[in-house]
Image (tube, rainbow, N blue to C red; front, side):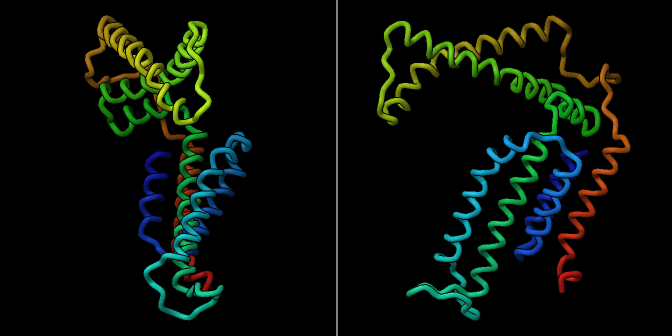
Length: 240
């Protein structure tokens, strides 16, 4: 349900182009994170930093290169004139990036991948073939990361010198990617054979060992998200 609500919020925000709607929504998402989540804020700040830089980039590029330059001039610097419409568009894009990124991080940092896949299978009737494929892919990520480091260390032991130039290091990664991809294909084949040997056919199940249900806390969070969404969409009425 969290995935459906967050998707609904993002889809709704895409139709509002004023700066106040994404700003109010972004502040509401931050308040929900502060009050109800237990995320690592240091990790959150590390992940949000690139999106803040992106939002700032959207802001100043929209101010300088906007097509719509009509309206009253509110700020001028040399030959650069910033109109009220340009400022509204720049703030709207910036706050929209921050709102979408905060919402995405809220979902990513508070969602267990296994529980999420089981919820998609049980509540949204996702095909088990797709669900287990995505789940195996999630489980392979840390394994591939460890294998990447092991291949690099093995190549250094065999005398492969690490390049100092960044472009040369980028080209040298192909020496690591080829054995890495070969190992990933072998692991994927072994996983497929193991699932078939255990009776996996891809058909839908009538019962599950771990049943995912919508509880009172889920219903409360859904109501809070919808309240923040309605509050941000109707800001023109209560902000004046």
